[in-house]
Image (cartoon, rainbow over all chains, first blue to last red; front, side, top):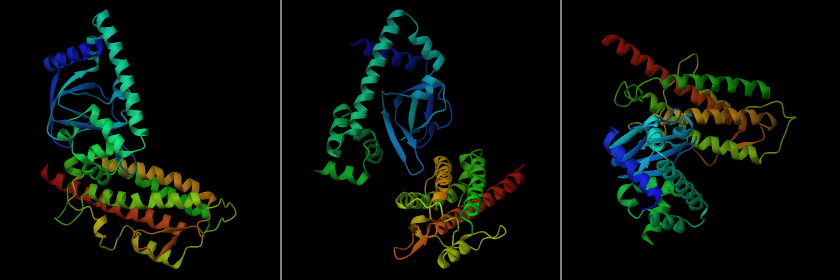
Length: 179
Length: 190
């Protein structure tokens, strides 16, 4: 197990134990743009999407389902108003850890901090992966890249959100899925 | 009519609409979805209706303005006959509107709507203010835009701005009435 995997596992363990349980209905918001995110969530069951709203449409930028950690990251880290909305895609149960609890957890000892650094490195790498996802010209390739990372995506998340995540119309997604 | 006078007037109307819509953010989702009767619109439906028009007109106006040459000389705007007709039809007169029927694709009745409808409306109006700022160096008479209901007709840019913004005003007035109605109802309960 890598240090990043170790801390993720321990964090989830801590969250499933001491985290506050939060039940949200389908389409209900966990956080809305403009408010400050004070929690990080572990998805016990259900599915969540993070999206950015423009004057013309919603852009789904993250998807999480059973087992994922999710939060409005820049708001959570920097204590600034969230630019993102977090919304339950279906009935969802979350375990929430407050920022204070989170900081206490990672600052617990030197080993934890080292693992946390490794986790942040992984996050940075994932972020670059995602940038390349979006720069990839061919819609077919964009879909393949994501399916390689998350093979079960279509079982967990409605296609319209996956299409938005992949920056394509639902029609295009449906067409390339068939081919 | 003077170009800058028109632009300032439309900016003022739009700013007022922004404040009115921002007020709706204080209401609960239940209140925002309240309708007086089965076929009348909720506050969110009023705004969603405008967002759908915005989806067309904000993009269309920006496209035409980007393609138009800079024209600082044309400081007068001459409304067209059709432009006057549409504006006159849509614009509330002393707070009174004549009922009209919406095209089906623009009618949001009974669609599932959430609080993002208000945020999207506010973002659209910020965009509208930016476009109005840029309109000061464009010929509002000679620049033409398409309209959403017919491919055969083009409107003068100044008329398109007037039509869209007074149409916004019309439905914010309607949303305001729903809110007033709601307040009276809630008042009765107490």
